[in-house]
Image (tube, rainbow over all chains, first blue to last red):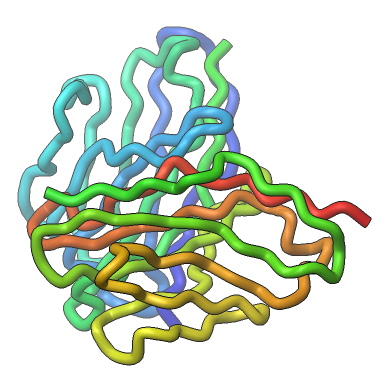
Length: 116
Length: 113
């Protein structure tokens, strides 16, 4: 149980285009989902927290107009990188937390974004 | 506030020898602590977690960790390393509120044949 999927697993796009990444909780309802960013050989940095049906809460330094997060249902959250630039190239990982797992988060496999 | 310090950025062991990955934490309340493993270009897999029950926690693949409140440590150990253990390991502390997890900087484990 507690499986989280991400789609796509990798994406290459041109500079200036927008990219949408999906995060799904497959066998539980995720009241809260988190989006992380990981640069090569670095740790995960929390970008934002989203609760179903409400606006996401962004960490300091993360541009909410550039990284659009939607959590429209209890099983799906999306991250859209708008007007992507090469410096946005990174590994994006989502995680989900349901009612019962108050402190544990279940992580998706990650999405590798490369912006040319 | 909470923080996590992984004392070694890189650890190299020989196959069959013990593994020790060190982690110290700071938290203003009783924390939950986790160890995750990440293989190259993969997501995170939970190895084990401490949530205020037994201080010695056993996880998957032969790993275990001991919560020592007096030392504010949560070191990860394994009696005998396997080649497949080579990966990045993250010590994580959980708190309350929206910033639920704080990650350590990671320790890269290399296993020599």
